[in-house]
Image (cartoon, rainbow, N blue to C red; front, side):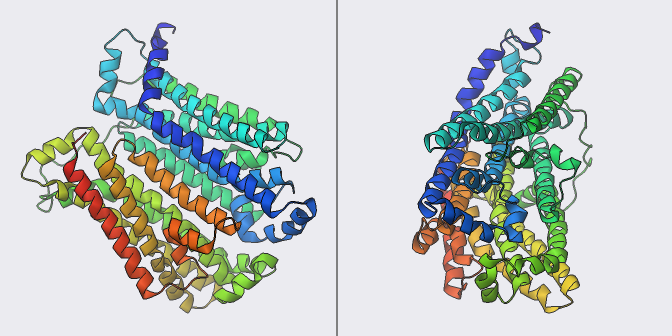
Length: 526
């Protein structure tokens, strides 16, 4: 067993060097988010009385669905409550990407064969990958703890909050390592881990809306920062459950890794056709074949989630109507039920930007595995090779927004009995498309300029837009600054989306994508 982990330390150093930029971004984003939240909360609510007055505005169902009920009315309690979901999602995404890159991706590209050709252990690469994610999450949690203590938060509550976030990131690292044993492709392992994250997020919303806390919630990593109750009579017992789940996934990953061949997985990919279809004769057909599976999963997930939200809109509207903070907001949108659906559409439209990142990673995987070289050795242009994936990335975003509109609209029409709700919600979803296209164009530009760190930078862009909206909601940023920093400011539910705004956003998204094409044509294939 000792020989199985030989040279782990050297592989860990190599992984940390390779992923230093991604890890640096991962460490900085949550710390800045927490510092900005604490500073803005202190500025907005200088006295305990002002915080108590604010508590009534936080008990509306939309806020509770996303964050749960506030457990401690204080600056530090509010900051933990406000940041836990966002930081948990960031930690899960970065941990998944890091472990998938250092395990399955290395096996696909042949890097693991070069590493293990030297004196090294059989399971050293897997241990080094898990330790890399462990170090990244530990640095993130340590920086977060230092920020909280520097801004006057209590020691015990800060440790509880950071510890739960740390173990949440470690859980998704271990889950990705486990999935990497079943699938022979890195993208499949990543997608499976993201699927667990999506299920956990939907369950998180469902439990918060129900208000019931049954036993299964203890198994959801996204709810650990809430269940540990920082600054509200901390319950550290939940961390033992988290440790047990992480240890179980890690142990299973090592046990399965010993029984498989390098480069293979327990779930063997099915054999392809012996002869291609007549339609499979262009680069665009190849791009569609690579993109269609992921797009189908997104469409089915969004459609079912949207239908569930639409069916719940009437119930949620009854609670929303009594929320003091949403009275004016609901009146501007024509009712509490419309306010609830408009906010859900707006929130999920921002999260759909992650689809663009995953779609572009199909092309990135082709480049890293050397398949793009083979494709370009034929009479194919670079613009066509990238254009197929970018085309389906933009077209896929349209389909996903339409699926969300169809799901929510159909559910709302059935629950309220008003058929016109279907068309209204569908139009509302389509109105978010120009802002989403700006984000997708930005992702294409980042891939054309810096392919190695394009995923980290793209995730940072998504986090930045969410951060800008938070600062605007807390009145730290002006409306003009919010519009300048986030394209989604132009399609906020209470705003009027004019024809000129739509044209400008679409033009900006197209221009960014065009610049990405030019950069891709001028750089080396990596």
